[in-house]
Amino acid sequence: MNPRLAVVWLLATAVFAMSTAHAEDKAPGDAVLGKYWFPKKNGKMEIRREKGLYFGKIIAYDKEGALDKYNPDEELRKRPVVGIDMLENFSYDPKKQQWASGTIYDGDSGKTYNATIWFENNDLSKLNARGYVGISLFGRTEVFERVTEKDEKRAEAPAGEGKK
Image (cartoon, rainbow, N blue to C red; front, side, top):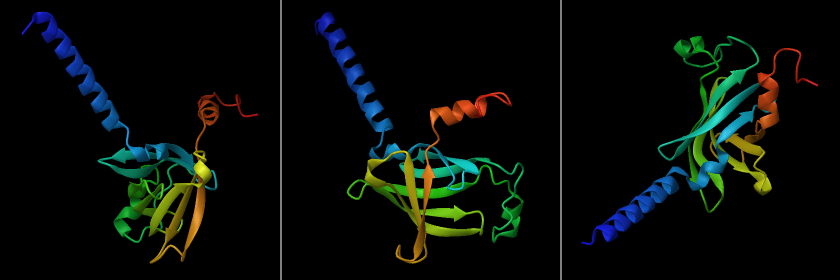
């Protein structure tokens, strides 16, 4: 094989491999990835993807050192609230444009519910979460607002700055 042709072939193969690997990194359901305020704005969670499923971990809570005191498992009542996966095992359904078959943990009651999450009218700033028992009809919907860059900068500002 011509050495120049071999180099071109190797470069083309490398570029194709890199573009394929990058495409696999971004899944269709990744629009949900990011940080969100709790509905009462008293904490934040961050949604991540692991092995094709989506999870939401509590990353901040306004009551420093708070424990999972309402958990039905006595051992888990000793764990800190920050670090709990409140959303677990969601898979993306592209036809319905929602994440389903997951669960949501309500730290205020210690209960875990089946849940579906979605964006209403493609508004990526507000994530709707419907927790339910049995069927979705018997449930409640909460809205989690996406943490903005402005929110992040305000949180990083020294005390007394940026909170106008």
